[in-house]
Picture 1 (cartoon, rainbow, N blue to C red):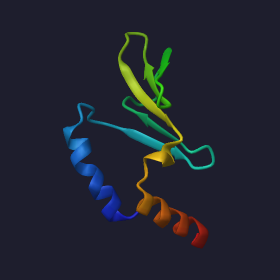
Picture 2 (picture 1 turned 90 degrees about the vertical axis):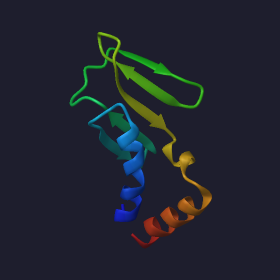
Picture 3 (picture 1 turned 60 degrees about the horizontal axis):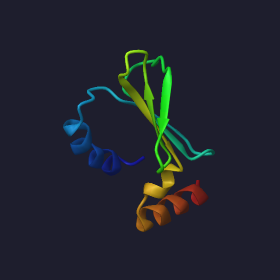
Picture 4 (picture 1 turned 45 degrees about the horizontal axis):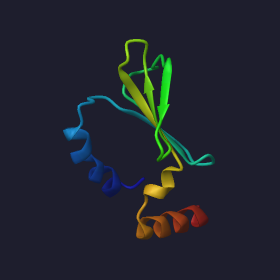
Length: 89
């Protein structure tokens, strides 16, 4: 990811109630994992109609999100750019 793309995330992170976020993206499965605690102990999942799974610990605290089909959130121009980068590899 280019520096410019990471910098675009800064306002979202600063406004977030979560102060630490661990992010992992599985490109083959197109799934984005975002955890708000290190090595979360998830005991409950709740998936909404948009394919976003909320993960909770034993106290009911939100510990992370799993976003299925994450590429659908790319804008058309971003998708074109991403596809070219993957092909050029």
